[in-house]
Length: 336
Image (cartoon, rainbow, N blue to C red; front, side):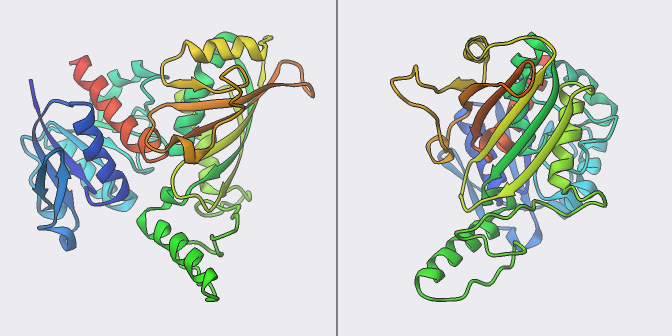
């Protein structure tokens, strides 16, 4: 059985990646409809060996569509995802708008696949934040084995998480600096080239940024509401790939060696360490285009009882967005 699939935001970074992965994974698409804003209507996007013309999201009739993979931005999705859901489609939404809605499941298939049963309440499934996805995939087997009490995470996030304009800003600033031009920030509040910006999204009243808040509340919704999360999120001048240094405090004892064995047995995680022919760690540059979350620098935290530290990296456009959305769609198809 094939499905009529619409991709909203098809011309953006995540939208293009969704189209690539749908084809790579042989998702059963009978008909593909790329959707975007009026200015992109008539443009062609690639789907396998075919080029498909983009249609206007604002004018599209969703009747007869089975699945919508939506990533056009929060405000746009807030308007059109409910319209698509009311027309009978199941919407898998990549934006932040629906994530904390109690009637919308927030799903990482390796972590909480059972939540798929709740999608019928609104016909909308939320795809978590990119930094949350990779962290909870790494945390899941650890939590199942030794129960996590507290997580302290520092993220080092690539500019692709802010979209194509941010990638262009990093490229142009870097090029301009070598030509003695003064960088002019536009997407970011400060220069991103050769810099690190400890602000992702807006500041909240308590001094936390919205990205840090997302990591806290989404981890609780996906994994366990009892877990305490302290996140510090930093944007760095890397094009693709998010990195995280994660510290976990566990209720029960778990050695680094035991943690490695749990990760090696867990679908979606690859362990890289000294036992892998001298490879001590993996960087975001090395995992671009990969599906897994890569874990390395695994060691005991001796400052607390039952503490563990590790470094994890993942391609934020794939597992952090497009791939996870398609894995949710695959889960949805299997559940029917």
